[in-house]
Length: 70
Image 1 (cartoon, rainbow, N blue to C red):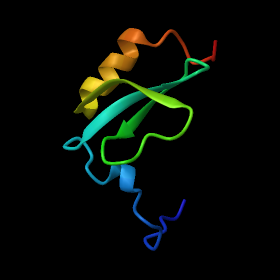
Image 2 (image 1 turned 45 degrees about the vertical axis):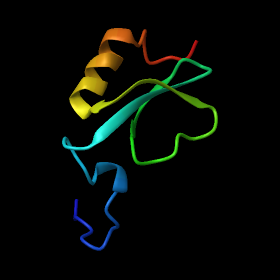
Image 3 (image 1 turned 180 degrees about the vertical axis):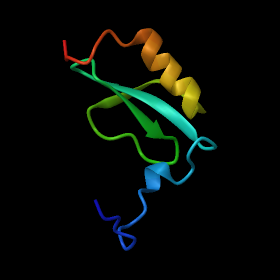
């Protein structure tokens, strides 16, 4: 597969492992890592953070009950 070098950079990945992240949850019990600099979207609530990316991932692994919504 060819790499498109003209594709825009994903701003959520810009800070990589150095930025602060939130763990969000929605009413269905789904979780998402979210960069601290971005506004939390409607329908989502912060349940952990801000913290380093790895801490956010560790929180999801410890607290999320699965991939399927409630």
